[in-house]
Length: 103
Image (cartoon, rainbow, N blue to C red):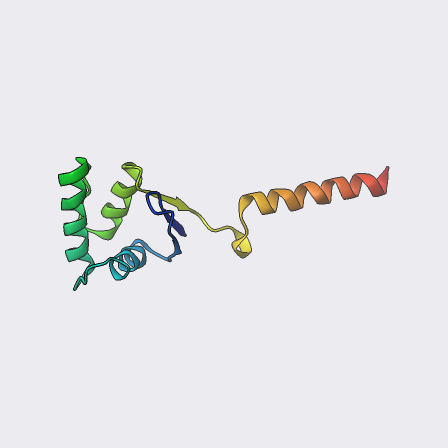
């Protein structure tokens, strides 16, 4: 999955919510011992300054709340890591090529 932080526009490909939160934690300005410690402080800061509630009991809940609060976008990977637009473009070119040959 491709995770996109809306405020910084930073992106990362991660295989799970755990990996994504670990990436967030490792790229934070402060050092955090664990994902749980990072999520708890991040949640506190978002509530204190922006009144956004983010659960921190699991990486799954944390990520769900980031999405619900408009802080994160998640894009599913497609076959061969191509975007939907690349696949659609290829399909359209193939269709027009067939029309040129058979007409």
